[in-house]
Image (cartoon, rainbow, N blue to C red; front, top):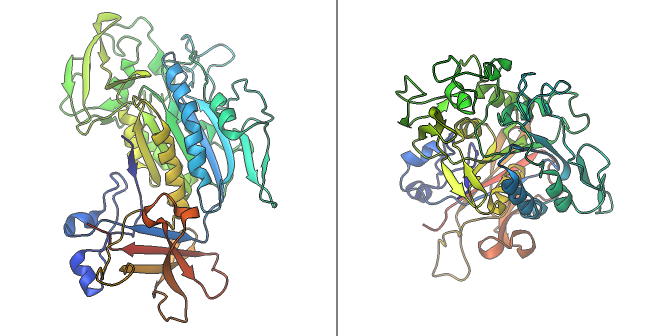
Amino acid sequence: MTNINHVFRVVTAFALAAAACGDAGSGPIDAATGVDDAADAAPDAAPEAIATINEAANPDLDLLFVVDNSGTMAAAQAAVAAAIPAMVQRLSTLPGGLPNLHVGVVSTNMGSGGVNIGGCSTASRPLGDNGYLQLNGCPGLTAPFLADLRDAGGGRQRNFTGELAPVLGCMVQLGTTGCGFEQPLEAMFQALQPGKNPGFLRADAMLAVVLVGDEDDCSATDSQLFGDPNGTIASPLGPRTSFRCFEFGVRCDNDPNPRMFGTRTGCVPRAGSPYVQSATRYVDFLRTLKPNASDLVVGGIIGAVDAQRTAVVAADPDDPTRPAVVPSCQGAHGSAYPGFRLATFLDSVLGHTSRSSICDGSYDAALAATAEQVRRAQGDPCIHQPLLDQRPDQPGVQVRCEVTHYTMVGGVRTDPVVLPECVGVPEVCWRIVSDPAACGDVPNAWRLTVDWAGPAPVDALVEARCEAQP
């Protein structure tokens, strides 16, 4: 099941009682949960029906895939490749069509700080792939990343041969020879550093990041985590296995001895670890990189995390004297371990996020959900819920909506103006129309439109709150 966290700060449903008085309830949406704080205070609120017209919608999108290339990922990588057409199709439904794309792929292999561990560090590559874009030997590529841009004639200009989906599908299948201490957050961080991958990251473009992996993040502070190769259960670092990533990167409730076998709950990233980076480092980085939340989308296909954030520690199958975290899910592509750090990162990003289980049989819904978040960040005039007919005894459908025009200044909404419905109104007004070409996948193919009485302001954001069917 795909879990989508929509971070809209202002739009809420009409409360039925408030609607009768002509008032709409409003309140902030919690950035960690996606839950509207006003929803608890207004239990009688009608379901949301949201439509947004963003005349300043960003047509440029930088899309970065961060793919686990450790030994168990072959089937999952193939599933990602198979789902890319669903993502491209969804991106193609944006109001302006497929964005001006830059697409890159990096691995989770950040090495082991020069410590000799198979698949991680070598003498010439102590930091593994170190956030550099990977082409994976795919044919038809002429640059470290894909550029697929609109041209003035309505076509596309590309720096590769062939179609986008199959070429990208080849690129994400990075193989399984990478480091078993996966560091996806640090790989993302390094990939987006100034000058690291020249030309890929555009200052004014939207950024979308997709994290794919079957183990949690183990972004290390330095090489200390990978030392003591002969460590035992009694050693300060313990055995040199992935359990170190859990012990030093995650903290659970009432857990004085993480190496003890048993079940614990409330597992979250460990703050102040000397060995593993804080997840906050990466949240803050993205907020600095893209301060306007509408310019940031992050998706994760990761090991399942339940509502209690449960971890089970049991005997390592390779050595029953050692502790190991038990997989949290099993699927067609293998088993996966709970992604506590990655889940917290995704829940904390102030932007548009989606999170799915890597144990799902298909990733079509997961990648389409990330594309849908891009669509919502850019503005979505389609009305996705059936609206309540205020006068069912009358022909047609009479709806109740409050439509507000904002001016966007530096990504911030200012100067709100409530617009009237276009019923004998000569000034700027709104109407709902049927548009199967643009909104064929929503009830009645309804779309919000504004009669601007001239060219639309380039800095306009229009947002509708409508009373939906219960």
